[in-house]
Image 1 (cartoon, rainbow, N blue to C red):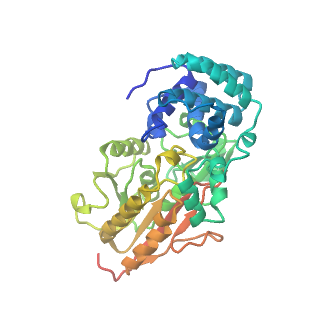
Image 2: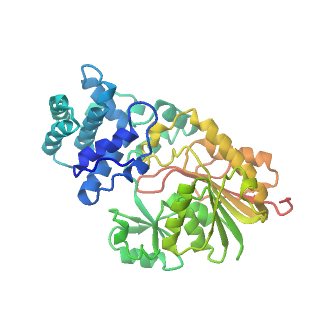
Image 3: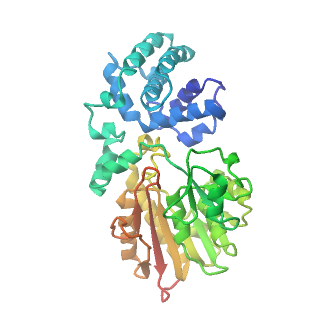
Amino acid sequence: MTPLTTSDPRLTAVRALNRVLPGKGDGESLREVLRDFPLQGADGGLMRDICFGVCRHLRPLNHWLNQQLGKPLKASAQPVRLALLAGLYELWFSDRPAHAIVNAYPQLCRKLKAPWAAGLSNAILRKASKLTIDDAVADASPNIRLSLPDWLFKRWQQDWPVEAEAMARANLQTPPFTLRVNRRQQQRAGAIAALGDGARPGELSPWSIYLSPARPVFQLPGFEQGALSVQDEAAQLPGEVLQCPPGGRILDACAAPGGKTGQLCEKFPDADVVALELEGKRLARIRENLARLNADITLLQGDASDPQSWWDGTPFDAILLDAPCSATGILRRQPDVKWHRKASDIPALVDLQARMLDALWPLLKPGGMLVYATCSVLRDENDHQVSAFLQRQPQARDVTPRPEGATMVSAGWQLFPQHHGPDGFYLACLRKESGALA
């Protein structure tokens, strides 16, 4: 779907949000929608900030707006509602001048062919300009203030009673810009020196760098030549803990968009790396991303839960399963997921993860390692999932390295989103005992 082009970043943001948060039914992925709106420079930055900000803070914005409306807006006026939410977001969460924001949105309503809403916009935003977000949500429940669906915050409180609120607050922050150094081209210290002020090493992954403020990738020294890749620090850990003998065979299951695949090629340059992905479009994304790294791998299209359709019968020395999941650990990066994901989605995801684990395990050589990973913070997808697998597979042994002070879980290693730090993430290293049958 190709939208009308416009140089107005606020209008573009509302058009994008109308596809992501349509007001009825399921919306599209924000990341995918933004591909259709390639605004660059300051206009692109403003447009993307509004899109991510409205999705990130949707509940408190909606809460206050609903209190101001004498009667609900009609479903056909969803673009007007999104424009009002965008204006509230800018007033309360950006450092742009309040008068400029208040003046911009009545004209935006006219561009939306809703001139009747110009006066409403002016009145609403003038009132909001005299408040802070804390004023606006003073009477609201914690899940509204923290901008979470009721079911998800309840689930977090059940799973992580101590960490739930801090985790929610971390997910309201803008995520850090994190890089992975290509160890085949340079050392991390050299990369930090080349990046200059604002670059610092990560604490968990030995090749991670945090860079603040973020920069366009074409401004990063060596990026086009594959010297650096954009990848969260937590997402770098599965590839770092995976073990494989020299010249071994590695399967990266559910490999798109290819960040971990590229990392495996950097860490194991003489390995036979096989990347598996179900969808052809996502397989093409892997190919594009690996071309920059000049990585030589085998690409396969297939279902990780059904190896009979793609496996050639040769076992693997190591398997990385970055499983489909709820994405509840990366809500600061994909805030629209909060409003697309439903409680009823979780059992089907848990079932799919279990089927993938059971299907891939026989493909692993005795003595080999399978690393299971998710970007989730739900225990049913993580340590409960792996504990159940260990019960089903007596030859499997949990050998996950855990740093001192890591949260105790029944299996594997659970990370929580940290402000200026890694995303929420889970991984488990599972060794197949040498006496096991392949």
